[in-house]
Amino acid sequence: MKKRGIAILLSVIMTTSVIAGCGSQTSGTGEASVSTTSSDTTAAVAEAGELTLPLTDKTETITVWMTNDTTAMAKNGGDYNNNPYYKELEARTNVHIDWQVPAAQTESEQFNLLFTSGELPDVMYYSTGSVYYKDGLDAAVEDGYFLDLTDLLPKYAPHYLEALKKSSENVQKAAVTDDGRYVQIYSILQTSQPSFFGYVVRQDWLDECGLSTPETFDDWENMLKTFKEKYGASAPLSTVPTFLWNLGYGMGVYNITDFYQEDGKVKQALLDEPEKVRDFLTLLNKWYNEGLLDPDFASETNFWGNSVLISNNNTGVTCTMYTIPSALFIPSMNNENASFTALKSPVLNAGDTLKAGYVVPDTNASWVISADCKNPELVLKWIDYMYTEEGALFGNYGKEGETFNMVDGKPVFTDVISNNADGLSYDEAMRLYTYEPSWPGIYYDWERELQFVSEKDFQMCYVWDDFDHTATYYPSYASLNLEETAEYSDIFSDLSTYIQENLLSFVTGSKSLSEYDQFIETVKSMNLERVVELKQAALDRFNK
Figure 1: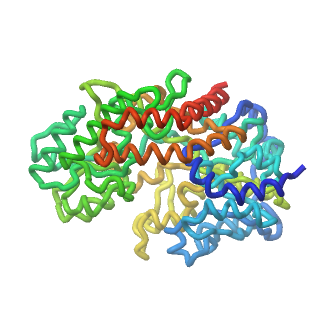
Figure 2: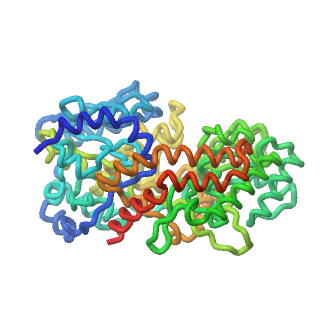
Figure 3: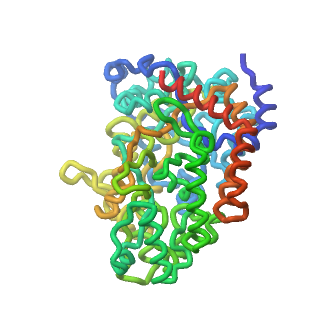
């Protein structure tokens, strides 16, 4: 029986608190094995046969709720149907998309309001960390909102199941809910991707100062002091707080604002390693007082590096993505000798192994199909096309002969993408002429972007990826169930804010480190230990 009346009321009451409190949640997972529907997906593809285009004899319309890609919207007149890609996709499939796109930065709020609207669109973007049903996927099915796809996928989306079968064990687990259902349809990476962001340093400054690549915290401190003294850098190290906390990895401080695991046991640094956290905060406070940290780091919003500080030679070290230094930083600097190289996070002793870093998930966001959808079979075929050989090639590279050509058996972008006559950057062009990056529902070839990145810049990824990927990694797919989610939200929304505020205060000195012990006692009194128990339950289910 549908529970829409209850769910609507709860959605209105809890929208704000859930969005604030569940930011650390990630993709769903389940106890059931993926083999429930994909033990022989190759046979399923053979039985279902290759998709025949067009998918329907007469044009059919499906409604799709999708987040706002502001870059694409700025170039397509505010309508995805103006993208040459979607015009061609409609011509191939005979499926017209009625896009429902909320204003940018309102997606979470507008998604929650969908459940009060009386009728849901056929297909909806879904990402557990930002746009999601507060009670979880199983509840969304039981409440009558989302469609259970378990019995439909083998017949109508066998190519998706085949891609899922080739993916990692974590992805296969994530594809199934706690109750053993298939509800989401993920994007799946064709190949694993190394860590694509981390710290970079002004290599030209290192060379001019006669410094070797820093390895330890002492090396980093010496480097930052030298940059300040020699170049007058006002912010030798500049980054957002999130990335600043990551420097603690080399001191055994893992995910200071979140959770980690060791040998299957969930831990939280403030509970399990409070003295290591104290040492780390003491070091950051010292750097802050000595002018080695950006004095405005606590309010920094430039997630991938403050290009103003960099162009003015006020920063020598920042955190960014491998695609940015050559494309953004250097062109803004008026310094033909400027160069950047990747840095590993510092360690206490030379030769120490880093036990944490960013693990790129093998999936991205997903589609969910509404229980109101009148033709889920057509919708699934439309999605499944993106997992066929032809559909994935088209989605990733666009139309052959127009946006790419095959060269030595590999797709190579034409000038429409790489040197656009209308002045579009390659990123802007890809968002118009191919399937948008990071969107759900495609067998995604992330390596396509390497056509626009030098080999030198790409090698940064392998520097950042040089850590033990299994030592402390809490699987992003391990999810809380309905009851756990409610309790987690109730506790962690306020607790997370309290932790973040105090960490910043200890670094800037607005709160003395003499108050650290009291801070730890307060954190314990706010039930952090109970939150760890909830995360442990989720991890135990995931590991079954």
